[in-house]
Amino acid sequence: MRSFKPDSVPEEALNAILEAATSAPCAGNIQEWHFVVVRNPGNKKRLSSAAFEQAVISNAPVVVVVCADTEEIGRAYGERGGSLYSVQDAATAAENMMLMAWDMGIGSCWVGSFNEQKVKDILVLPQHVRPMAIIPMGYPASRPQKPERKGMKSVTHREFY
Image (cartoon, rainbow, N blue to C red):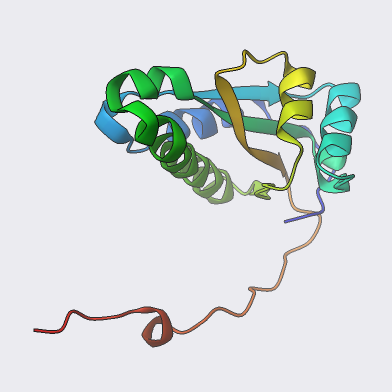
């Protein structure tokens, strides 16, 4: 979803979306994720710039930046926690968020291409908190066509005994 109506996303809907994110599975139940909600047009424009001018960010009524505290998860799982589990945990939270949004008639887009340090600077994040995804959200301006996907048989491999 890359085009949205200008209608605001109600706070109650956004809270339900964020609640779904916090219900995602995560390593050791550490819940090291953080969600930065951005509605300010100037901040959305700065995030768009940090994401290589992706207009979907500045044009969305609301943007949620999914972050992970790599220090917190690292205390439990060492380097693997900070470098892998934090990414996996943020991804499950973002997926839950996007699925709940869609269920409520709200579209979203996963943006993973951005300058991490610029996003950290814009949001004033501590060094150990990494932005993992930028999720613009809003009511769809149109219904997108379902993209073609590889068939299950081409991506599924069975064990051999």
